[in-house]
Length: 109
Image (cartoon, rainbow, N blue to C red; front, side, top):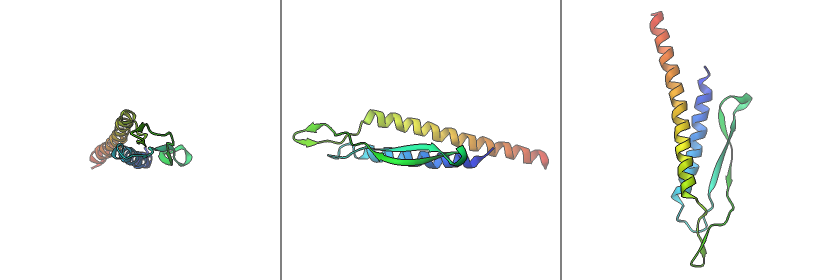
């Protein structure tokens, strides 16, 4: 088992979570444009990494003569839940590998 793949995925997911958190924090900032962290497979298909962070240039709604942010809170929340679950799954794989190694070492001792 290659735990480095899980660690790189957790690192990339952490970055994606930070981008989403920034979007949510700026939901009431006039003219703010949401960002997206785009993920891709790591080198040789091993792990995950952030390929780019892009800005959504879709204009926000107009309110009293000013443009509001274009952050869609509902989709941001879905993204946060998805990212949390993926992060937890990678942590569980690392924990399972650690437990398995512990059991094997206990059998050898």
